[in-house]
Length: 199
Ligand SMILES: [Cu+2]
Image 1 (cartoon, protein in one colour):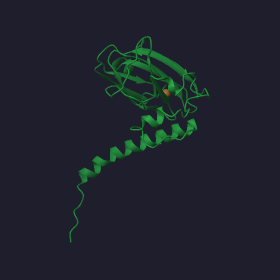
Image 2: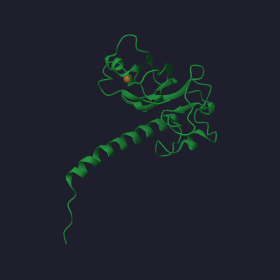
Image 3: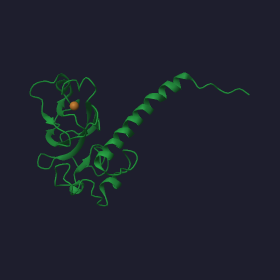
Image 4: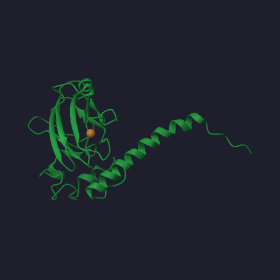
């Protein structure tokens, strides 16, 4: 009996996916441990569990520097919640920006590192640093963010467990991006992508 040898191409193709999954799961585990909450496994498909039921993930302790909590309506933790293009999505406006919470660290990473916005919407990014390293958060056109161009919207000096916010309107077609330009962080990969979807 002969056993088929798995084609090496299939093996090599499977590795990046596993690495990405491990990174994502690890990041989630760190984030949940830091928050002292128990997140459901996986980062998608469970918005009801995250948003409903009043579990008070953000409520009360004030760790995120916001009195709104998770039940504020147009608010989500990163990629959790109703995303652009999904049924029930509500685009942020200048009067009522959509709030997207992003963690900086632990490590030289943002979570999430990929964000979708609807063209024309106004988003308030609420950035919290996890871990002892101080970070920055710049957002804008991808080329300006990559170049650390002067005048690009940025929050500086977000220290451990500190939360700061920045509001930005995505009035162009993109591409947009975000990054940390603390010394060496961008080069280490501390950046993220922002995809603009039709309004
Ligand atoms: Cu950083």
